[in-house]
Length: 319
Image (cartoon, rainbow, N blue to C red; front, side, top):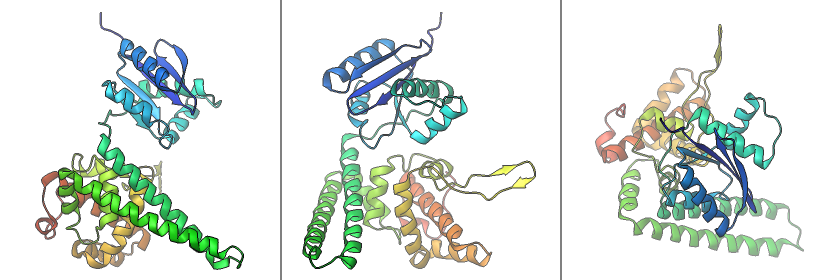
């Protein structure tokens, strides 16, 4: 007799972890510390689940994810919005840790998202440094805005903090460069990506840190993954505007800046942008299309290990 497939859902909080399993309906809670994680890994190994689902919680889930992945358990991290929408669609409006774990297990069983390889330790370090750089940049912008209206009593303190943040930004940039250069694979990919006009250090670093799938997916898959693929909004005779949403917001943010630069200095993206404007497309829509085209080109370059000079005179491959 064929063994029934087991799906697990795990809700991670600061001090505890709630677990639910389908189709058995079992639920339990453990402390979120080393002994608790070891106990959870042991119990899941016994159950042999085909999927263990967690929500992205801003990094709180990472120690547990690493422990599960180390034991070769099929762990998947999903967007909390998707799970919340799924819960509402199934009539579950209440929200508790135990109930959230059950919803995650149900989501895994019903939707069965693809199990993708998790980032390795080096990529996690790079992603952490890139994330910290974004945080420092945000604080720096805020402090500079505050300086404009600061009174004399606090101005020296704000100026001192700005100086510290600027030095921290320099140190982070140096740390990112060293981390990048320590990996031959990253170094080669970085050199390859930065041959493209409009792709600078921050775009390359962000793609390497947050899109490890780059070069392994088709053009449609990579566009949907990042969130630059247009989705239809049609119903009956109504034909709504196609919009982009979801995906990886941090990657989209740097791609937008890259598209702005590329629309002026990259011959392929510039001509594409001008054609869209000539066809009457709004600038924002045209730039979004440029983001997608730029991403597809970069994906193709990594997949085929082809520098920009080999692709600049031809359309991006369909795969």
